[in-house]
Image (cartoon, rainbow, N blue to C red; front, side):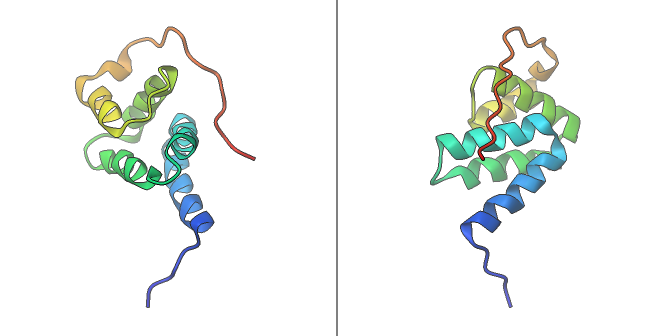
Length: 101
């Protein structure tokens, strides 16, 4: 049989996976939920799938860079990982926390 998750349990499951990668990846999770409340799971699953190709530290650095620009699109985060721009300095880093109470 399959366990049926509530919306909250479903979000918590993915939040835990994103948090395992790092704090910036988890912050990005909250921003994605806020900006895309209906279809957040596709973006989150895409980001998590990057773990098949890139180590967690690369994904975390890419999410940090994406957050500094307020970007939540999977394609942009994938490109940051692919082209190595996660190594570039983040000039105008936002220290905002996107966690919701």
